[in-house]
Image 1 (tube, protein in one colour):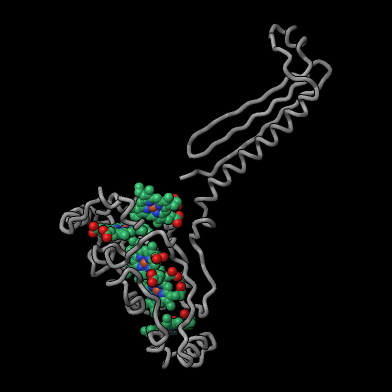
Image 2 (cartoon, protein in one colour):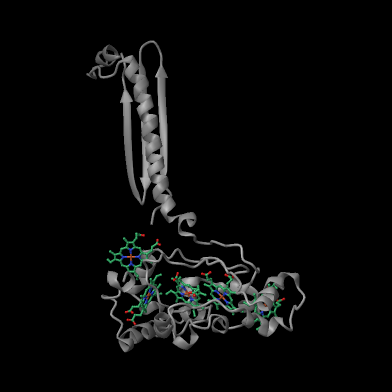
Length: 276
Ligand code: HEC
Ligand code: HEC
Ligand code: HEC
Ligand code: HEC
Ligand code: HEC
């Protein structure tokens, strides 16, 4: 993980009849490492330094001084650009974390899951058997909304979709690239809870992406799945704070289950598991 990178440029300039000194210092701090790059020039003051007993050779001429400044400015820009790029890779913008998209209907998981307590599997019907969880067809909404909120303008696209037989076009937020193979059913069968990968969906008025789904995220769990295993019949439960409090008993659960299922963490990070 990259810490916020800092580049600091301190430039000191003395200008008097005797001495002229340009000094520039970069401090670069990234990922816990710290580096300091320092430049200084002593344009025509050879004698001056000599006089003080310091033998500084004449390296820089007056025009070199200007050039040095230009080079320094360019270097600073390059450093900033490089560090900004590294930070960008982990930023919410690049990873689409917290990403919300405009949907045909402003469907709220907070209301339907958190408020009404509808189980995920009522709408995402294939999550236990298939690779994909599936998005609900219109008639599932209509089991309730043919009686509830029947004339709400907000639900007009749902009624229209049912009348015309065209599915609603939900915009996806949780995705992995095509070259990554993912399968819901194996995770659900082993008791990896939805909340591990999708966050507190019951608190989302609009769906957003909770995790970055970078490779490291998958690998972190694959190399040590035990602490993340739950009873498979409870995978849709969102709040596990009480489970985490009662830790010793539950830690044993994960380790036992890794054995019982024959999960081999040493093989779960093979490239061919996810890149087939
Ligand atoms: C099990 C019943 C049920 C199902 C299924 C259901 N809803 Fe709802 N929905 C409700 C209830 C009850 C409310 C009112 C909630 C409130 O006011 O707290 C509601 C409210 C809404 C609202 C109004 C805004 C809001 O969230 O309060 C929208 C929009 C909506 N539902 C869309 C949908 C869509 C789209 C589907 C299908 C994917 C769907 N609903 C499926 C029961 C249901
Ligand atoms: C009443 C139906 C309903 C229930 C219950 C429901 N969902 Fe959804 N879910 C939807 C609809 C409709 C969408 C598409 C619209 C959206 O993204 O808000 C969706 C989208 C999602 C997405 C985003 C998929 C993507 O790539 O865009 C995730 C993740 C998700 N649901 C997880 C859950 C989880 C976890 C639960 C249970 C805690 C749950 N849902 C319960 C109807 C439901
Ligand atoms: C181990 C992580 C993980 C778990 C656990 C998980 N998901 Fe997902 N989910 C993903 C990933 C990754 C995607 C994107 C898949 C893709 O792009 O092909 C996804 C996509 C989705 C989608 C988008 C539509 C689709 O058909 O796939 C829905 C809906 C969804 N998940 C719901 C759920 C529900 C409900 C649960 C719990 C019962 C759950 N997920 C558990 C990682 C997970
Ligand atoms: C919180 C834990 C967790 C996370 C996060 C997770 N997985 Fe898994 N994954 C598991 C477990 C547990 C298994 C089951 C292993 C077994 O039974 O051998 C598994 C199995 C799989 C399998 C099936 C392996 C097989 O042999 O068929 C694939 C593919 C996979 N995961 C892909 C992914 C991808 C891609 C991601 C990231 C988007 C991901 N997983 C994130 C825990 C996790
Ligand atoms: C548990 C699943 C999983 C395993 C195992 C896995 N990858 Fe990935 N890999 C992913 C995911 C998810 C992404 C997508 C990352 C993204 O979208 O940022 C990815 C992306 C990549 C990329 C694209 C560049 C990048 O880093 O984003 C390369 C290259 C890659 N993987 C190589 C490998 C190699 C080599 C191995 C074996 C040592 C491996 N992967 C094992 C899940 C996995």
